[in-house]
Length: 498
Ligand code: BES
Ligand code: ZN
Ligand code: MN
Image (cartoon, rainbow, N blue to C red; front, top):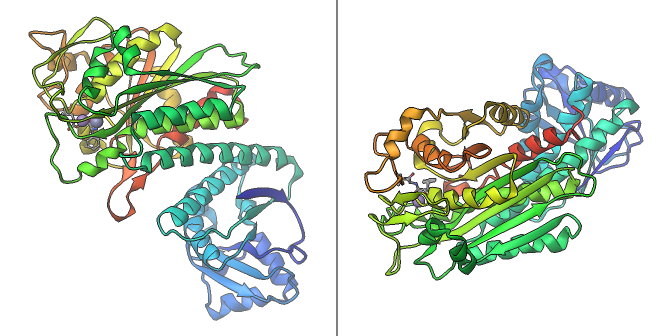
């Protein structure tokens, strides 16, 4: 899909379809008004007849409009003039993209960009339109398995002063979409294909694609053993698919900001629960237990596509949790890489066991910021549902920066507390910690467990158990929180002029 910027008189634009807006009660937008004048009142005549009323989501496709060269004009309802915003754009895109594709339309001239109301908003308009269009196209091709005819969208930008901002928006949106789609594709794969080795090979491929910027180190189970990562190894101990940890190091030559940002992704390619086995209903969804790793992988693709002037290390903690004769068991005491011991009370609380060893391992990079992304607890789904990611941290500035990025991208997060009081829930009388609490607040006690291993750096934990995928007939990875993480990194790199 290609995106262009242009400004042409609408009567001579030569495209398959011009998309223009009509507000509620039939009020014309600027472009609709221009087309109306060229066509001697053709559009207002249709409105007066009641063919379209401008309610959001309504649309009317016109052919052979008098005095217009383009093959078609699509009138789209934009709702009340004063209420038009980014959310309205999403509603419009969701309606029109499947419809335009069905008609085998290839090239679109898109005038709704004129509806922005201030200079900066053009950036967000274009970002939003492109990301929504890419999501729609992904869904149409993967779930409906339909051919994609759409080839290009040209955004109508009249004010030359906005061109640079609009160009930046296209560049950012394309890179973020590329990352998001890569994350979705990896997470959607079945667990018999996407096992820990497969994930590590995907990571290694990044160093070939982005030769100048990415180096990948793969830590196999032998190396893990010599490093003392016994908690991580215990989780993978009974699967014939051995654990692999990928360390993706991204940097550029012109990186002035020497800070090291580490993104850690939980990558359980399948979580059966192990000996504390999960109920069989919906167990298949536990192939998505690697969505954190996939999101980190996608975010690194975004960074490399934009050549962000940052040092980012992505760690994909891949592993498979299976029951078997060599499984770790409830009752086991594990010696973690940090030297702290953990009593296993439930083998299904495996994510934190894998992550705690990763947190120790990454100390060698002296990171300034560490963010982990994990489908960690069902309790987070109970607390926040499926639209909001759980956010935990030991550093409030980091929280504020993540919240800002979440607000900018509508990739929502909500902070939950890490009060000291929760620590007693993960106490054990035979080890330093137990791996589960038993007095409620399961998302928090899990985060509290993690926080015991992240004291050496500023750290945030994103529990994406509720937001990483959708169930049911539209089942599939959402790619969250690639947009949030991408925006967070863009804000840090100050590439984003907005
Ligand atoms: N991967 C699951 C968390 C999960 C469950 C995510 C359902 C999305 C939907 C995690 O490994 C897990 O099993 N957690 C347990 C922890 C419990 C044993 C303390 C859970 O949430 O039930
Ligand atoms: Zn899990
Ligand atoms: Mn589990």
